[in-house]
Image (cartoon, rainbow, N blue to C red; front, side):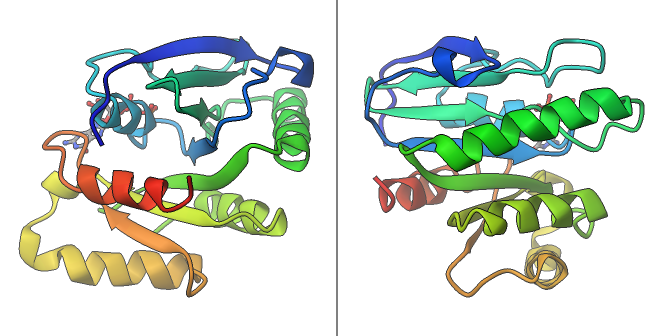
Length: 193
Ligand code: GDP
């Protein structure tokens, strides 16, 4: 897909702030530092439109991006940050629950994981949370450039098995560094639009 425009629309904390355009939307979730911002930036050909995930203490927001006036990406705040307080974690959970239960435009969720390591227990919890809302899931295993090509299939198998992926859920090998997997990811997103 040729991206001709990409902009941040709003950092929202409550539904009244969500954009109202009835265009297809994709939510992106992932552990802090996994490479979610790099994934977004690579997909939209920008160096730094999506910032590195918010650190504890900062307001946790859902960041809406509009691409080609055609679709939204929603950057969900990163999880698995040990220092986040219980109160913050609960607020995060409520915000996500509100979003995932109410958002009609949402077509699928993208779960970003690190190809180098088996998905963590937080990744598994997030995948199960998304499946609980009966959402199609696209799993993006990133940082592929850090693994020799000959080991990609083995690592993908571990990712698929550890998450216990549904038959229908796609698993895409990606690199925010080289752009590997970008066309496949856009192809998959298009199939949901
Ligand atoms: P986020 O917290 O999930 O948004 O993670 P970032 O996108 O900010 O990435 C965290 C770190 O991993 C940064 O230092 C990135 O440069 C690095 N990184 C992200 N994706 C890749 C990738 O595909 N390959 C390599 N080699 N490094 C990556």
